[in-house]
Amino acid sequence: MGEEVKLHGMWASPFSRRVELALKLKAIPYQYIEEDLSNKTPSLLRYNPVHKKVPVLVHNDKPVAESMVIIEYMDETWENNPFLPRDPYERAMARFYAKFIDDKLLPTLAKLGQTAGKEKEETIKEIHEQLKVLEDKLKGKQFFGGQRIGYLDIVAMILVWLHLTGQKVLSTEKFPLIYEWIERVMKMEVVNECLIPEEKRQDWIQLAQRAPKSASN
Amino acid sequence: MGEEVKLHGMWASPFSRRVELALKLKAIPYQYIEEDLSNKTPSLLRYNPVHKKVPVLVHNDKPVAESMVIIEYMDETWENNPFLPRDPYERAMARFYAKFIDDKLLPTLAKLGQTAGKEKEETIKEIHEQLKVLEDKLKGKQFFGGQRIGYLDIVAMILVWLHLTGQKVLSTEKFPLIYEWIERVMKMEVVNECLIPEEKRQDWIQLAQRAPKSASN
Image 1 (cartoon, each protein chain N blue to C red):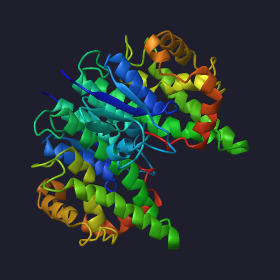
Image 2: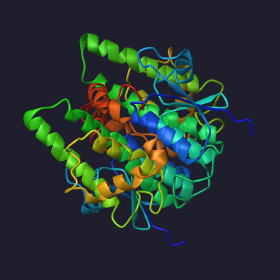
Image 3: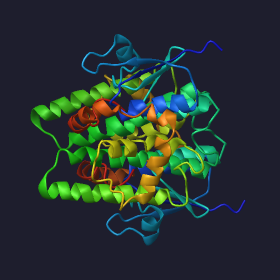
Image 4: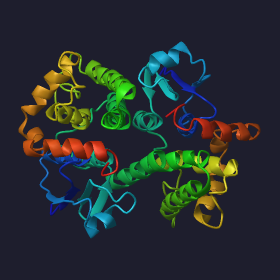
């Protein structure tokens, strides 16, 4: 096929790491280019002139930016190991909850490190309500995608990051199904390859609290 | 077929009106329920418990929320008059720019009414840069979707609203291709049916400036 796949990414970006996970789940060979966000490569700026952010997937010289757009592109281009369900209604539900994680949960999580006192308490309450929505989605299921890891599981990896960085907001008692899911996905080698290395977890917490939405999408 | 399609919407919501346009473009008969956002119907709250917002499409009793999720669902359920192109890369580009309009342009436009002085000048500069991205997308094309109205055109209808409400930020001189596109789509009856009635345009400007993102998605 002579296909060339490159990924411009950054270790600390959950958006970038979810594209890496998607590439690994589809078993697509790719070249990885780690970007220094304070000194981005000319290629990144050329490939993503609109946002100038990671991740950017470059497939046969054609760039695609925005992690969720990349993942749908991959699913339509490489049909093995499909991420989205076949049924249009199930597909809509997967997209709805993926958007919920990116547009609602992530901004609320970002507020955690920036608030204190009563405002922090309210933020925690809001996060609990949002996590409850995801907990309910796991009822009777092994994965968000059903019997196997899928589109919504890839997006939900941020829950594993929360767990790994010891965020108390994600408590085992309140969210037992999320915890079972975390244990289940962490047993998968491809998932482990796309998490934050142990020695970098403290750095990550600081990075995430400083610039939650500015570095990547 | 015995299909039942309902839309819970609101006249002033561009998100709701874009779903109406999509229904009309696919020639799908539907029942429209106008929501009073200060006194929402119990059905809306039951159908969209996560966000409690319009638009919600209810297809044979199954609800779908979030305008872009609804439009992709419609495109996968009713295959006539496809919104998205067939080619995966072109599909990715349509999704990328739709997301750009919703996640970048709309929040910047919302800032217009909330800023003054130097901050307002910077907001206008930012909007011009964002509109330039869309102007460039129209080079050599009749519609954002190419030869016919498509997915990105439906999302870009907000540009027609800007024009109709006399927002000076969208100047004919700076954005001639956007203006040609506005003239082209306004000649289509289905588009005109999904714009704001003339007598409500002043109300809309005030509504949009007061609560740009809270009423709908």
